Amino acid sequence: MYSQVSKVALSLIFIIQSCCFCFSQDSTNSFVVVKEFRVIGNKTTKEAIVIREVPFNINDTIPIDELNQVLKRTESNLFNTSLFNFITVEPVYFDDQNISIYITVEERWYWWPIPIFEVEETNFNTWWENKDFDRVNYGLFLSKENFRGRKERAMLLLQGGFTEKVGVKYIVPYINKKKTNGLSLMFSYVRNREIPYATINNLRAFYRSDNDYIRKEVSSVVGYELRPKLYMKHNFNLEYKNVTLADSVILRNPDFLSSGNTKSEFLNLNYKVKRDKRDNKNYPIKGSYYDLTIHKNGLGLLDKEVNSLYFTTHLKKFWELANRFYMASSLKAKYAVKDAPYYLRRGLGFSNDLVRGYELYVIDGEHFGVFKTQLRYGLVEGKTFHFKTLKADKFNKIPLNVYLGAYFDAGYVDSKANNLINPLENELLYGGGLSIDFVTYYDMVLRTEFSINRLNESGLFLHFIAPI
Image (cartoon, rainbow, N blue to C red):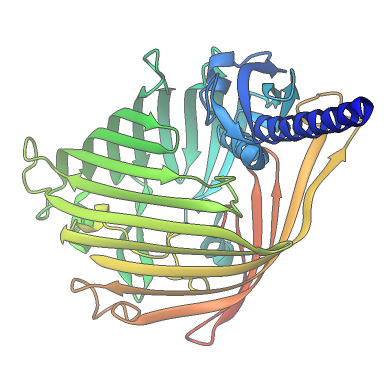
């Protein structure tokens, strides 16, 4: 009898202990606690610059089912610094509950003496129509990225060709211990023998003088950046401009600068707030982006006739539909409270502010809106090619991603100033087509697109930035 009671008691004790153990295991394994960070491979970059991008802190608690997502977000944050070619973020367990975060990075090449060869057009396709080498810039761009290992940038520009330019720029992203405040300084001197003086029939009209420089400009900018949160930034820029024009420019377009003046000096003030949660700022496939910018040209202190105010806002969304299928969309709008003269006015047709299919046109106006959407398929994703013949570690591993896409864009430019001589203003613009995009290291993107627009014009176009 005693032995039977003992067996029952022991069985009950075993069951209770087992239940307690299972409950303890479930409770313990439901979250982890971050006890330390280990940064590996940062030969130049200061460890604090890396840790600044981590979206959690020491002793933070992370649910187990969210850990992988948080580590991927950390990799994206670090990649968007443009300091590293490859990044791996992994947990190392001390026990069932406490972990160390190992961040392994492969740094980029930070010295860039780059020969300049760029076209002075709204985009590459406009230049390709005529292949006019008089509208090419050449020279040397010298940049020291990640200066002192603190993500600082020092840049020098010496340029000839269509636009002769000398410029220097220095960026210090963090000037306080919390790494929330930054400063930038820029100075440039520019002169041209040829400039676009007006937009006629939605094409830029140029005037050239072989005897003298028809535009000279001095510009200096002081910038302040506030980054109170990981994905939020506020930028303030105060710019001084001094512009001198030839009389012949004003004769061709009295609205070029300010009330027919050939000389003007004025101040510009820009404020921009943005929230950026894209996985890759150069070619995102997941995440979101939003910005709002206030542009004030002329503060009433120097040339009081330069006085314009406008707002721009940009929204982008990227998400994965299914395995290797992605959707991207964006909406950008501009509203001018007081319009700028031609020299400071900008509508659609420049760089990425365009409706695809209208690359060869410029559509100026006081207000505009443009909507873009694209379906993508990841034909090649996460592929890395190793070239052992290249001895430089920062170049012998080349990542490659290739995306096939189908897209549709629509836009509208509202204009009262030049709508009689530019028929695409105040008209609905739309176009679509198919694309192949190549994405590789050092933020390089090559887009090849076949587009058809509302005018039934079609063509193959090249671009070197992400479409959205």
